[in-house]
Length: 113
Length: 111
Image (cartoon, rainbow over all chains, first blue to last red; front, side):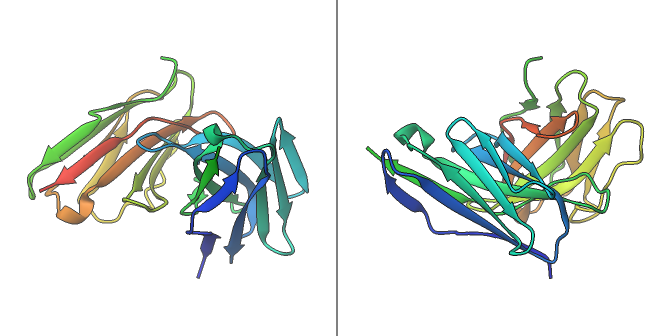
């Protein structure tokens, strides 16, 4: 069966450290993968997109990697701040032409001051 | 408008009643999506509209659920004969190519 798995346990780190979140997928052929941030009571906010032929993408303190052999994407936040505390969702679009994103269940990040 | 607007923000309804949820996408966004998010869970795809193409309804969980979109503007999601299991946040998003812009959702509680 198809699955997108993110660590359901919250990730707690100290301010200033690098947070690394994992997204693993099974039985998908992603055309591209996206990462979103969701705060309580709000809709997700788009952060980064990475295509199947890209290994790495950066945006300010954010970095995403994509390994189609391992079927895994890693999401890094460097120099983390308490304001980075939120739930982070990965989502993918398959190369079947279907445009709708399929989301993982998200990982909650808590950055301690 | 500047963002995706959803109404109402909260809806409490009695089991068996029909509800209608509204989404105003960003002007010019040709694609519109509805998702459902149960407490503590990820987003579950419901339906997708792209321009004048036939909508992708593959995520609708039962025939009690339906959605319409007028051109490239407002969309309504209707749930008939609501059940307690329909309680969730219903999120709407619109996009041009990549990257969705989500509304804040409608929190539906069926009592």
